[in-house]
Image (cartoon, rainbow, N blue to C red; front, side, top):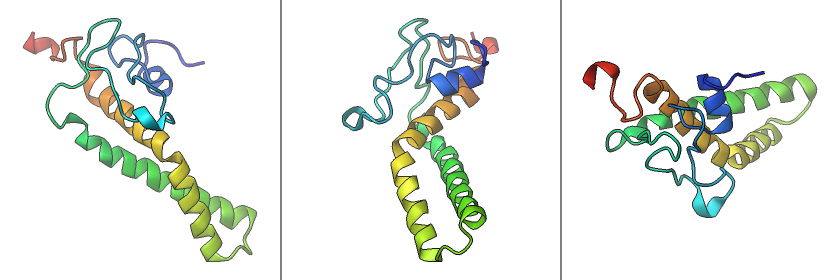
Amino acid sequence: MIRKGTALYSILHFKCPYCQEGDFFKARPYNLRRIGEMYDRCPICGGRYMIEPGFYFGAMYVSYAIGAAIAISVWVAFLVLAPAAAPHWILVAVGVITVLAGPYVFALSRIIWANMFLAGRGPGGKLPEEE
């Protein structure tokens, strides 16, 4: 069981990287009308989620890594479970799974990025020595 207060708990439950209590997103990943809408601050502790303009551009690198891991996993699964499958069907399966996982990967990459850089900061978004 994943304990509250850890980065993994925050990532898997889409919770605040500071307090692990407040929600990070305004809606779930597959609510396509509100995809990517985040709170400016944690509803519980008031921690800032956007510490500078363009902060989440780096989440694209995380998204790329997750997408590549999904594609490679699907490819290997086909090679192991259905070795006689034609390569074009494998590519179709990789494409479909990647598109279907897209909203979740988008949200996951943002919360991972936030936990990488915000978890050691105070709720104001500043490092302890800056306060």
